[in-house]
Length: 367
Image (cartoon, rainbow, N blue to C red):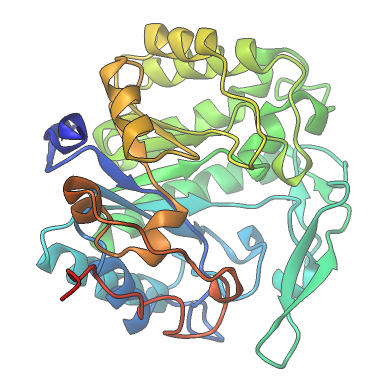
């Protein structure tokens, strides 16, 4: 039974038709050279409006916020116009869509940032991390990231302003709200996680200090567009892109409590999703539920049964299904009817055009 996944939910002032989330997934199909969303992306997202909530792929808030080739931005007029095509197509089919706002910090290379050295909480290089750059033949060329420059107070204030402006741009582009990407080793995560932050000022050291940048960014965006349109994604236990925290349960329970004081509309927790990854500790999920009064989304290795169980337990309100949404545009319908799921082609995840993006069919009953 998957009845609970199909219960409606109120998210701030928005009514969602079910509890199924299409989480953010980078697909690297933005139009070049301006990194603009385009018609094939509009088609891709509109095919997946069976989800109660769609969160866009990570969308950089500035040229320096870009980590990989061909990812879309939301800081130029042309980028806003590109995303408007997408949100119009999604709304036409009754979908709800939030923009995931992204600054990668140190997870980049000057080839992706117009020759500028990436910035981070600290002058610490992400070890054993590669990003892809445009190698000039339409295939990604992978390169090691470089050592970043430690952000000054001025840098911090400038980036907070870029997030605030990007939130306003998202609404101008027709999004229903935004998700702050504070997970997976990117800029905000580089402040939060102890092993990526060796600052000695008010943005480093204690948990409270390491969460300060997160709180300031959220406050700026909530002031600009309303807290009921701001969600936040966290990844407490992943070591993606080289960020690790020494006390993740304490740090991220504190993050949940902090986000509760800002009244963000949801917290979206990315669980570790590789094959033999450890389960997220139950104690942590209980802490978060106790600390935070809003909508809780979990994503990572969920199938219909596990998703149903998560909602039934009361620890989750919505569940994200990532890779299955790539190859099953009608995923909610397949879950509801118990139809088999199609597998995705990993070779066509990043870059390219329609193939592997918009050409996966909906389920049709065998004759």
